[in-house]
Length: 266
Image (tube, rainbow, N blue to C red; front, side):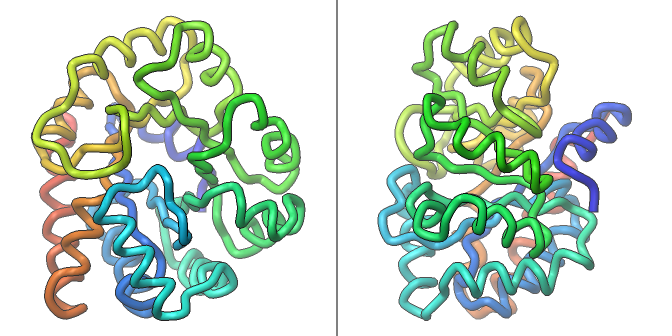
């Protein structure tokens, strides 16, 4: 499996925008998550973001919060997520990016956590409640274990902070499309276009846009604005949670194909 950076380099050479689906591990159960990862990998995903269920997910909207609650209620723990990644990652082309909050990392111990996720097969890490000022505590050891720490740029960030985040982020820069939590929205804020242009002035790193993309037209819009990746979370989580596991898996397969077609190179 390629690293996050290598994946983006290959896509850039091909003139392609990346599709990054998000799933919550253990919702509705770990076996379904394993199947879902393989289905997404086969049907257009370039990288996959996998959320570790957490009891106080401050950055997550109602759909992903509900998924995390169901997963935790079913008994999913970090060890289970690591075992899942270890089981599935060897068969995937798409690098896995873990999405988790800082407290579980501290609980485990930074070095131990990074070592374990690297051994399991994860290639990237997103920690939404990690401020830039504290990022160095993870950035330095993450490099040693081959884990790329992806930092978030908020739409309210001033120019000097955007430049500092862009300099430190590894793999790509995660541009949050809207203020507030994750979730499905009917339209993209035009400010995103300006933020992508602003980032282009200070970095040549890949830029992924997330939080709010739920429709093929929105994914294509951010691609046309210059984004290197469209990150889609709640729309996948919602489809997987509706009906039986088989119906949910079929729904995300079809949705992944539609999104991939929407951001295919002309």
